[in-house]
Length: 203
Image 1 (cartoon, rainbow, N blue to C red):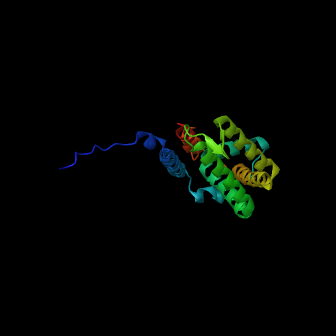
Image 2 (image 1 turned 45 degrees about the horizontal axis):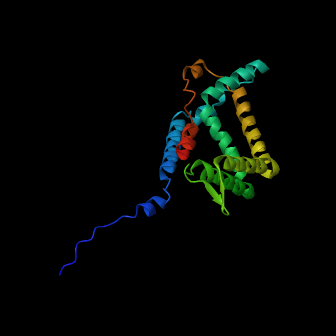
Image 3 (image 1 turned 90 degrees about the vertical axis):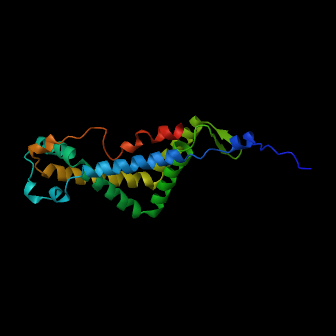
Protein backbone atom coordinates (compact mmCIF):
# COMPACT_ATOMS: atom_id res chain seq x y z
CA UNK A 1 0.00 0.00 0.00
CA UNK A 2 1.48 3.33 -1.08
CA UNK A 3 2.03 5.92 1.63
CA UNK A 4 0.11 9.19 1.28
CA UNK A 5 2.08 12.10 -0.18
CA UNK A 6 3.70 14.37 2.36
CA UNK A 7 3.20 18.10 2.32
CA UNK A 8 6.44 20.07 2.80
CA UNK A 9 6.29 22.38 5.77
CA UNK A 10 8.54 25.41 6.08
CA UNK A 11 9.56 26.57 9.52
CA UNK A 12 8.82 30.28 9.10
CA UNK A 13 9.93 31.09 12.64
CA UNK A 14 13.39 29.61 12.03
CA UNK A 15 13.67 31.38 8.70
CA UNK A 16 12.69 34.71 10.22
CA UNK A 17 15.14 34.28 13.11
CA UNK A 18 18.12 34.39 10.76
CA UNK A 19 19.63 37.90 10.79
CA UNK A 20 19.52 39.70 7.44
CA UNK A 21 22.80 40.33 5.75
CA UNK A 22 23.33 44.04 5.34
CA UNK A 23 25.13 43.85 2.00
CA UNK A 24 23.13 46.67 0.29
CA UNK A 25 24.69 49.21 2.66
CA UNK A 26 28.19 48.10 1.66
CA UNK A 27 27.32 48.15 -2.03
CA UNK A 28 25.72 51.58 -1.75
CA UNK A 29 28.68 52.99 0.18
CA UNK A 30 31.35 51.71 -2.18
CA UNK A 31 29.27 52.67 -5.22
CA UNK A 32 29.00 56.24 -3.90
CA UNK A 33 32.70 56.23 -3.05
CA UNK A 34 33.69 55.07 -6.54
CA UNK A 35 31.39 57.58 -8.21
CA UNK A 36 32.62 60.44 -6.02
CA UNK A 37 36.27 59.62 -6.71
CA UNK A 38 35.65 59.55 -10.46
CA UNK A 39 33.70 62.82 -10.33
CA UNK A 40 36.39 64.43 -8.21
CA UNK A 41 39.24 63.30 -10.44
CA UNK A 42 37.38 64.61 -13.47
CA UNK A 43 37.64 68.10 -11.92
CA UNK A 44 41.40 67.77 -11.41
CA UNK A 45 43.56 70.37 -13.14
CA UNK A 46 46.72 69.32 -15.01
CA UNK A 47 49.65 69.02 -12.63
CA UNK A 48 51.84 70.83 -15.15
CA UNK A 49 49.56 73.83 -14.75
CA UNK A 50 49.92 73.59 -10.98
CA UNK A 51 53.73 73.89 -11.15
CA UNK A 52 53.93 76.33 -14.07
CA UNK A 53 56.63 78.76 -12.94
CA UNK A 54 55.62 81.37 -15.52
CA UNK A 55 52.36 81.96 -13.64
CA UNK A 56 54.07 82.52 -10.29
CA UNK A 57 54.85 85.92 -8.84
CA UNK A 58 55.28 87.42 -5.41
CA UNK A 59 52.05 88.94 -4.05
CA UNK A 60 52.09 92.70 -3.67
CA UNK A 61 50.28 92.74 -0.34
CA UNK A 62 48.49 90.55 2.18
CA UNK A 63 45.17 91.38 0.55
CA UNK A 64 46.52 90.31 -2.82
CA UNK A 65 47.80 87.06 -1.33
CA UNK A 66 44.45 86.26 0.29
CA UNK A 67 42.64 87.01 -2.96
CA UNK A 68 44.95 84.69 -4.87
CA UNK A 69 44.50 81.93 -2.31
CA UNK A 70 40.72 82.20 -2.53
CA UNK A 71 40.70 82.04 -6.34
CA UNK A 72 43.28 79.27 -6.56
CA UNK A 73 41.40 77.21 -3.97
CA UNK A 74 38.33 77.33 -6.18
CA UNK A 75 40.34 76.34 -9.25
CA UNK A 76 42.82 73.78 -7.87
CA UNK A 77 40.58 72.35 -5.13
CA UNK A 78 40.97 68.72 -6.24
CA UNK A 79 44.74 69.04 -6.65
CA UNK A 80 45.03 70.71 -3.26
CA UNK A 81 42.90 67.97 -1.67
CA UNK A 82 45.24 65.38 -3.19
CA UNK A 83 48.30 67.20 -1.79
CA UNK A 84 46.83 67.34 1.72
CA UNK A 85 45.82 63.67 1.46
CA UNK A 86 49.35 62.71 0.44
CA UNK A 87 50.81 64.59 3.40
CA UNK A 88 48.35 62.82 5.74
CA UNK A 89 49.11 59.43 4.20
CA UNK A 90 52.87 59.96 4.47
CA UNK A 91 52.55 60.99 8.12
CA UNK A 92 50.38 57.99 8.99
CA UNK A 93 52.55 55.46 7.18
CA UNK A 94 55.56 56.93 8.96
CA UNK A 95 53.84 56.07 12.27
CA UNK A 96 52.35 52.55 11.86
CA UNK A 97 50.97 52.38 15.41
CA UNK A 98 48.95 55.55 14.95
CA UNK A 99 47.73 54.23 11.60
CA UNK A 100 46.52 50.99 13.21
CA UNK A 101 44.72 52.89 15.96
CA UNK A 102 43.00 55.15 13.44
CA UNK A 103 42.00 52.20 11.22
CA UNK A 104 40.56 50.41 14.25
CA UNK A 105 38.56 53.49 15.20
CA UNK A 106 37.16 53.87 11.67
CA UNK A 107 36.30 50.16 11.55
CA UNK A 108 34.41 50.51 14.83
CA UNK A 109 32.32 53.36 13.44
CA UNK A 110 31.61 51.47 10.21
CA UNK A 111 30.63 48.09 11.61
CA UNK A 112 29.08 49.10 14.95
CA UNK A 113 27.05 52.09 13.78
CA UNK A 114 27.05 53.00 10.07
CA UNK A 115 26.53 49.54 8.53
CA UNK A 116 24.75 47.85 11.45
CA UNK A 117 21.04 47.26 10.64
CA UNK A 118 18.66 49.33 12.73
CA UNK A 119 16.67 46.24 13.79
CA UNK A 120 19.75 44.53 15.26
CA UNK A 121 20.82 46.12 18.56
CA UNK A 122 24.42 45.86 19.67
CA UNK A 123 24.91 43.12 22.28
CA UNK A 124 28.19 42.95 24.25
CA UNK A 125 28.67 40.39 27.06
CA UNK A 126 24.94 39.81 27.23
CA UNK A 127 24.05 43.50 27.53
CA UNK A 128 22.02 45.21 24.82
CA UNK A 129 23.07 48.75 23.86
CA UNK A 130 20.71 51.20 22.21
CA UNK A 131 21.68 53.33 19.22
CA UNK A 132 22.16 56.35 21.49
CA UNK A 133 24.45 54.41 23.84
CA UNK A 134 26.42 53.03 20.89
CA UNK A 135 26.83 56.50 19.40
CA UNK A 136 27.90 57.93 22.76
CA UNK A 137 30.44 55.14 23.28
CA UNK A 138 31.94 55.61 19.83
CA UNK A 139 32.09 59.38 20.33
CA UNK A 140 33.91 58.93 23.65
CA UNK A 141 36.36 56.50 22.04
CA UNK A 142 36.98 59.01 19.26
CA UNK A 143 37.67 61.80 21.77
CA UNK A 144 40.08 59.58 23.71
CA UNK A 145 41.92 58.47 20.56
CA UNK A 146 42.17 61.97 19.07
CA UNK A 147 42.98 63.98 22.19
CA UNK A 148 44.62 61.46 24.54
CA UNK A 149 46.99 59.72 22.13
CA UNK A 150 49.57 60.74 19.54
CA UNK A 151 47.02 60.28 16.74
CA UNK A 152 45.49 63.71 17.31
CA UNK A 153 48.80 65.57 17.30
CA UNK A 154 49.96 63.61 14.25
CA UNK A 155 46.82 64.45 12.27
CA UNK A 156 46.95 68.08 13.37
CA UNK A 157 50.59 68.54 12.39
CA UNK A 158 50.05 66.80 9.03
CA UNK A 159 47.01 68.96 8.27
CA UNK A 160 48.91 72.11 9.21
CA UNK A 161 51.78 71.15 6.89
CA UNK A 162 49.36 70.37 4.05
CA UNK A 163 47.42 73.61 4.53
CA UNK A 164 50.68 75.59 4.68
CA UNK A 165 51.81 74.09 1.36
CA UNK A 166 48.43 74.88 -0.22
CA UNK A 167 48.38 78.47 1.07
CA UNK A 168 51.98 79.09 0.00
CA UNK A 169 51.29 77.84 -3.49
CA UNK A 170 47.99 79.70 -3.74
CA UNK A 171 49.58 82.97 -2.67
CA UNK A 172 52.32 82.85 -5.31
CA UNK A 173 50.25 81.69 -8.32
CA UNK A 174 48.71 84.55 -10.28
CA UNK A 175 45.12 83.52 -11.11
CA UNK A 176 43.73 84.30 -14.54
CA UNK A 177 40.20 85.52 -15.15
CA UNK A 178 39.25 82.16 -16.61
CA UNK A 179 39.78 80.57 -13.18
CA UNK A 180 36.47 81.95 -11.95
CA UNK A 181 34.55 81.01 -15.11
CA UNK A 182 34.68 77.32 -14.28
CA UNK A 183 32.71 76.91 -11.06
CA UNK A 184 31.50 73.51 -9.91
CA UNK A 185 28.38 72.77 -7.84
CA UNK A 186 29.03 73.07 -4.14
CA UNK A 187 27.73 69.56 -3.42
CA UNK A 188 30.01 67.84 -5.94
CA UNK A 189 33.34 66.49 -4.83
CA UNK A 190 35.29 63.66 -3.31
CA UNK A 191 33.19 63.49 -0.13
CA UNK A 192 29.70 63.46 -1.64
CA UNK A 193 29.52 59.69 -1.14
CA UNK A 194 28.93 60.33 2.57
CA UNK A 195 25.58 61.93 1.85
CA UNK A 196 23.59 58.74 2.10
CA UNK A 197 25.87 56.07 3.51
CA UNK A 198 24.77 56.53 7.10
CA UNK A 199 21.12 56.71 6.08
CA UNK A 200 21.31 53.52 4.04
CA UNK A 201 23.00 51.73 6.91
CA UNK A 202 20.43 52.78 9.49
CA UNK A 203 17.35 51.84 7.42
